Length: 86
Image (cartoon, rainbow, N blue to C red; front, side, top):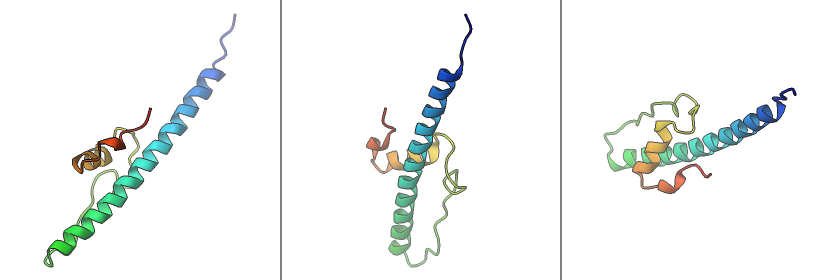
């Protein structure tokens, strides 16, 4: 009896593609909220000339679903429902 790895590989590819989609969506939400917050911060004090975004979101987008940048940002803002759907 021989082992055919293709069904396993296909499942892994499908899961990876699903996770990539979730990462991209969560990053999109976090960036939109970061932009909104940056504008609100700047509007609250005329002395503020800029707001710096740092972390994996600032470098493009997180590579992992559990990236702390977007997850903690959104949780701190009271958005626990942003957790990845199962």
